[in-house]
Length: 421
Image 1 (cartoon, one colour):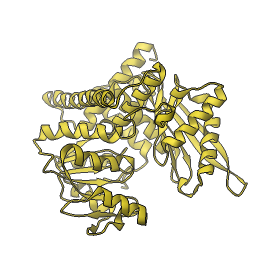
Image 2: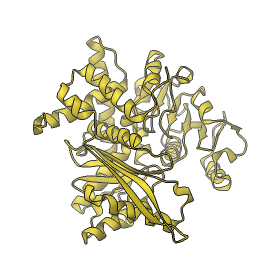
Image 3: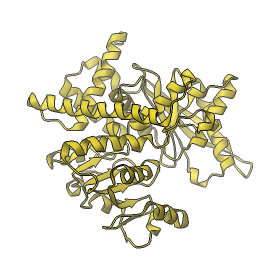
Image 4: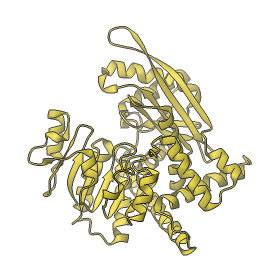
């Protein structure tokens, strides 16, 4: 039987498993299996040749029982409604686990932004906001950057929304540049939050991070910052990294400046000199202390999970491990820390930016980092405590299920208190 790789069916399957373990009310379970609102739009954008092309866009609000929707916007040629729905569900659990005043949402456009000029990208970004402006706002649903979208794109989107509303609405979008009231610290908050989780996990497992070897799959925002922060904060040795084109491995460790130079020169980190080539699949099976998948979904699956054996698996990407792989990793005793704990630093950072926009009062970088550390460290400890609680009752669960139980119970409690069921 083929392994299920539909991301939304995976998200539903994870919820179903948590619901069974925690004995979730059937009415709450039924509400939480589907998004509250799904918007599909045709997005017209003028191209450099003067023609107008139409692209399919999405915005999904999964649940707002605990606050306005929150979630990124992805520009990707393989974007799909099922992926956006899954990511909106995971955003719901991520915000709930972090215990911040947001629900979950997500958006995207099916396009290849690498082929666009800056003017075409701006036209597309503004057009998308015109299409979904009735469904977003600082009190209803707050987008942010995600795959192949940037702070500049967020700035254009915020500006377009403000034009529609005829006044500045900085809080409609997070992940903005500092010039238009973004937040200090937001740029690397996803990776920094992951490093705080890694620090706590290493303490628990008695791993000396200064002597640890790390492999990172992905050289985007999260992967790049994970590389630099692990080196700076812990003195760890990053021995392998990949991007969508290929990757490199060196037992002696890699140099980030040389990787950046190779990427700029050749378009891929595999242009790095003095290291052996490694593929994305091969990187996952390397003998390292810490493995950080920081790329896309479904990278660790039934076919390779038995060969993935780090001391700590730190899921910085969204959905990098399939449910079948999840079970194999648990059977093999791999300490796998789930995505919606590990990468929640990004949405916590967005929450901080939104709070600052709403108040018109802005924090220092030190305040931002300290508040992020406090929230995500508490989340990690909550997950470990819940896992132990169920283990003590004779029900062994992995950290993902512990995180699900916490997150789902909070959303269900909010729905119950509001009278939704």
